[in-house]
Image (cartoon, rainbow, N blue to C red):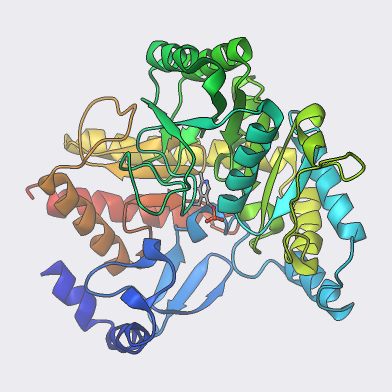
Length: 419
Ligand code: PMP
């Protein structure tokens, strides 16, 4: 019924999906955006507002899956990108913005002594794994069951035909003893452990400090390179999630918001490890890539990290998110329903079960149904969230926007409590 109302209100999105399906399987090139009966076709965005093809308006609580930290129309980011393009679209050369942006990244994340840019977070992780394999001369990687590190690094299932052909070992998220034992057992077969300090796509599930510390210690012992995927979580503080925990990985990957919302990824870490790319050395590892230093992303990144999302701004956004999540969870507790928002700072995901959630799980059909209803009810209230129930805050969201979300969640609890 909610689905039928959704469809009825959006004939233009339905039509756009029909047309797109004729030329793209599923009607889009981003699987994450697909849902039944059809995804919304957005026409325009401004600040933290979106308007769809049917003219419906939304408060944007998805924030482009965390890449939209600055909203859709930040003036100085647009100006920097436009000024860069006015100096010529991509020049097949090193640029000053590239080095300045790299300087900001290294200053911000002390564990990143040297950095290189990519087009996406997926590529950043692929290159970080390649770096670790080259540096250690080893082959295998270890990841957490249920983790997502990019299109070809998706571990919701242990085996996926799309995944990189890298021998892969698994650990359970937030199981310090089990993970440390698995790392020690892998010994000198293991080149890298790749882990998010909070699972983002995996359900906004924070790692315990003990878990990350156990990984740190076991990797130091065996010589495996510890890679923190902070593509999403680096927004959580002046020095990212690693800074909050005070745990230093050997390498870090970044992406999403760091170039102001433009296409980007970055990987970096200890200078001795990153030196495998030093072209002055014999047998340096190649890492080319036409758009790695594209002029708009480099220019926008300089402004985004250097002038807008400063360390203080990161701290403030984290606190704002914590307060919002506490308000949402208070509403759930008041209603006495098995519903909660997990996460940290400005990222959270709704779950329809009681008790602590410390690792990815398979939702029951009933939980899935509630999740879909939540999504549809939020849309009906003019609030855009991810189909899987993820929310990520952007800087232009107002206090009134946050109040509207809390109110919509209260209404959902009142109306759908008996599902
Ligand atoms: N790592 C994490 C933790 C991510 O959330 C994502 C994207 N959702 C990626 C890597 C891949 O980044 P991209 O989509 O830019 O390839």
